[in-house]
Image 1 (cartoon, protein in one colour):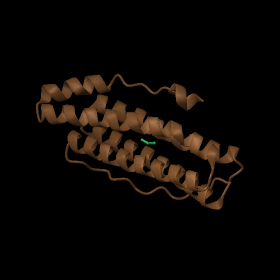
Image 2: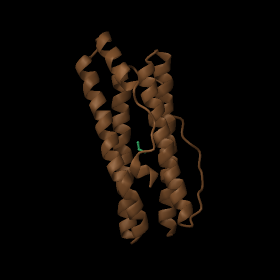
Image 3: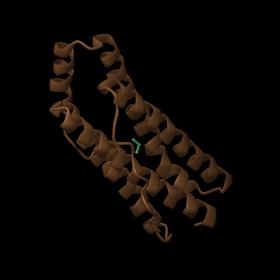
Length: 170
Ligand code: FEO
């Protein structure tokens, strides 16, 4: 594997670990304001991000590259409302999408077809991630500060469970 690609994949392991850390911080925020369903959703999100990091980790090893772990940045720990949290989620996922797009651009310019193929799963994953965060942002905007609306969303988000989705299990 080319040096540049290896560095970029190691960078993405760190970015996915940071995502997991960020969502865990968001879980802690929801725990602190007793919105258990929101907290559950964030726990699952954090688990998914760890799975993403491990996919990059395993792929890097499979391709004979050395995984090098760097420090994970401290995430934000306080937000002003559930809506502010989900706006931050959406913003973060858009950022991750741009990172994946950059990785694909690099794989194409390096003629690294294997990495390009590996990254395609993340393209669909990012579409889903942005869509689900966006949907929750819209709901929270609709209910504004209405407590019964908030509790309904909390009950709905509480249903989320962590599963290894089919493409991830490949
Ligand atoms: Fe791993 Fe939420 O992107």
